[in-house]
Length: 292
Image 1 (cartoon, rainbow, N blue to C red):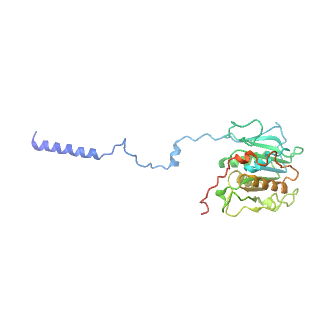
Image 2: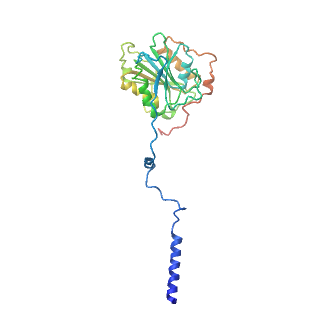
Image 3: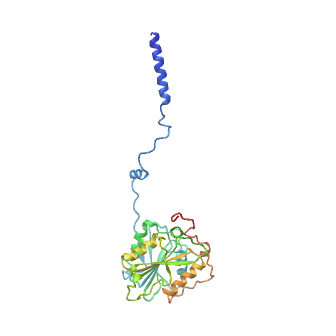
């Protein structure tokens, strides 16, 4: 082999070594960013099975359906649940079952610590007033189907009162934990008083309307929207803070003044209930950037 040929082979081998050093290791190098968006990647995974629909179950196997109460009260806030928990003149007539809510940890008898949705009759003689006590969290995605279940199908009320609390992150303004207040929202039928039995009296007479720019979401909003769509006289009471002796007294005053005149709402035992002391506030206070 001649000297020029050996030299050429040597130069070629050096060139291949340099090229090999510059090549990326496909097994250890960080891969380039994906050309797909995160939501596009989900298209390759099988969809999760849909949740079964919630349903009502009554203690009477064959009730006169649909139920047509004069007033349907739906308690969502901690303070309103506390108020109605101490009402002795109520009869359990049914429950709302949500398949996503587990039964583990619930007691046999109704209790504030249970994750349940019970339906009570406040007037056992004629069942004209029904109470739905919702003691579990209903997700936003399930709010519309639960609202449809409670209003307009098996239960067709003349009037609806929803009791919920103000969510600080949706409120336009500052709320102090030492401040006790309540606001209202109403359907058009409630404002106009389109009801031959109850006349033009408002369920929440004397309360200020929820401030403009503030928002309500979740189950409370779905229930009020359901009333508006069905042309039902509906009202939403939003109280602040979530729980405490002062807001409990305020809700009792509102109910006794304009809603439940003949029902005893006095609490049993000590005024400071353990549930009010140690219950976790659903609406954790924080500074919202929504309106800044």
